[in-house]
Image (tube, rainbow over all chains, first blue to last red; front, side):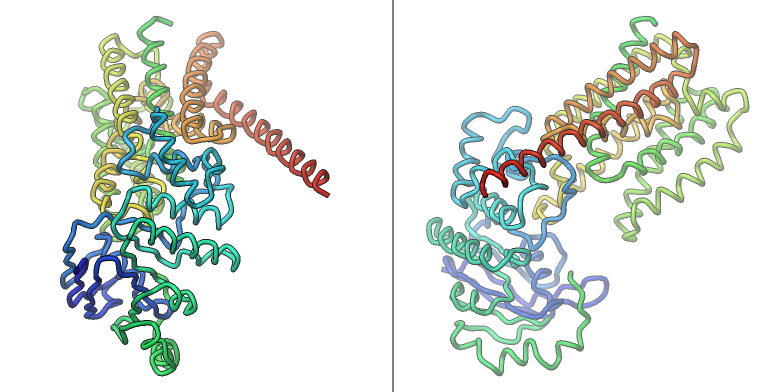
Length: 237
Length: 269
């Protein structure tokens, strides 16, 4: 069953075309990986799906999307006292109150934290937990909304190798348990191989698409990462 | 001090520190300080026209805040640059316009010149601002913390930001009679930065900020009455002292944590 159709989507950022005429479809339950060099428009494309950047073309959801989103970086003032519990209360549509959350609401938050083995972080400050712990909290928060699609933007960019494996393991398990559709942006080709049913190669234009085994070959990868890469500015959008 | 004035100053203190929480969360401490000066030409014009200075201040602040809001979005200018420009221009206009005999009152406020009507109006407005902030707290926090996570709520967050700025303009205008334009910005941030030093969560930070704001206000006004000094200045001096104390408290606290950690390390060896 078709879940998402992206038709001829182009996105300009500051007058520059960072996504150029991209089309693809995603079926329900599919796990798709987007790969490409820095500045190739991956994050921008994801933000178009989130509805937070303007685009030309069409994005058609065949089922009302409830999006769980794990951003590449979560910038915030680390000196501000803001507990994990408060973070859930502020950033979740389903929690009703902030000042006096019900015991049931807190129990629910704990349940999801337990899922990523982060229950003990409930009363800790977001600013004082490690990158890996923060990433796990972000993932728990993303599934807290009971999404039907999960968008992960390099969820392990700031985590060490050990933490990276834990996170991918957790994500994989979650996707299975909640029968989610997912789109993941990753640099790690091993992860892509392991994780995705289908791969989309993006460098402003779509360069290849298909099953990991079929797509992740020398030709495609050198076309994607080698040679031309230096032609593009290395700007993180 | 009569009851109305006391009530007014407490309400102003609560509204200021409550909204101040988001000024600090957005790292806009200097912005609010500077923004409060923008009220000056408004106050001056109101005095010349014989209108209530509050109205002049609010109109000036509201206009500048809305201009800043749109300039920031349209031209992607940084908010501190815009505010820096607006501030100096406003101060220049204010200095030219303001009648000499009213300059001190506009700059430092004069709580004793507050009439009964002023006080009632101020309490009503301050009360509304407090209720608004309470009700929209979650929304304000959502719009503040991370733009990364706002997803499809970007529009709602934009609206929240707009409401926040208007509330900010109202709160600054409200405080002008009590502490004056120069010091109103400080009244919004001093209790909050002190609270931030000692709090363990956003909720506790907000509660501390409000408590400290009220304490600083009441203590300042009383002190000013006893020693016959400008209330605004007394309030801010007390705020400064409280901030220093909070810094010490934080230092002691973090040293305590370090000590426990070291102890744990020793034990685990």
